[in-house]
Image (cartoon, rainbow, N blue to C red):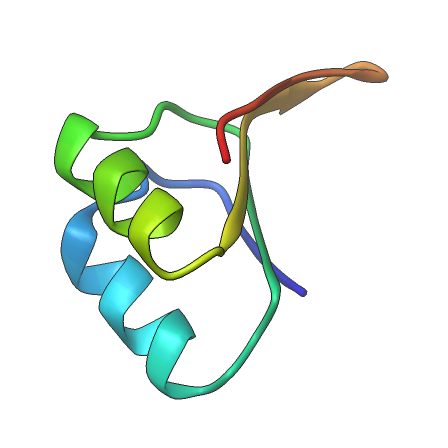
Length: 58
């Protein structure tokens, strides 16, 4: 798992996919391109992770 506080972009998703990491979590938002890439490569992406709440994108 990778945890970041910044916005999840397609560039970060590419690096996570290359590293074969199955889960990407952020306190911030996820771009549309990052969501689409996550769906294509079966990467689990969680955004807006705050206070025991989150949005699961793929």
